[in-house]
Length: 176
Image (cartoon, rainbow, N blue to C red; front, side, top):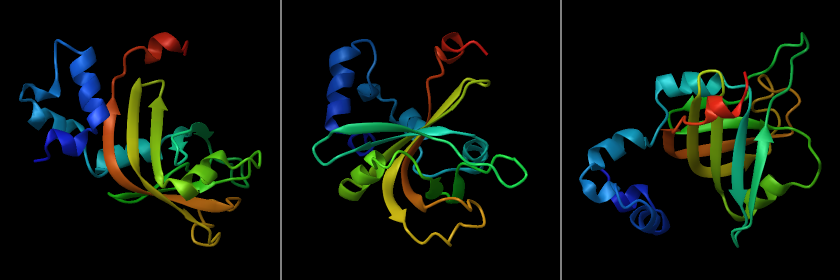
């Protein structure tokens, strides 16, 4: 069983004490914490992830300058949406990198700080999932060409943390 400092960094722990006087993870609920914050993607979560049509990624430069980007997918020759993410195994997910605005915010950050946060939101079911991990850029366009023919490269994420997040305000924020 992981300890608090293995799940949260010092800033998160300090904020929990400072801003939440009523409850802290220091109250002996470490078992619940370990159940909530997984270190790998299970089958049910993989099904949820691979069913999403889009997601958001967060990256940061070495000095902490952040970027958040939308990631969607392309259509195949018949007009069907391609899969946006592929779960290679419980610790690895892959997604395509398509042409964009040629600024390379995310890729630039990844080259100097190989960490990523990913947010999946299913507005209809009001589910929100976060995946955090280490990342590398795969430049061989042929590896997953059968899945994403127009992709210029692929992003491989080594999963370190997976957790479903609070669903409050999702439905209230979006008129479906």
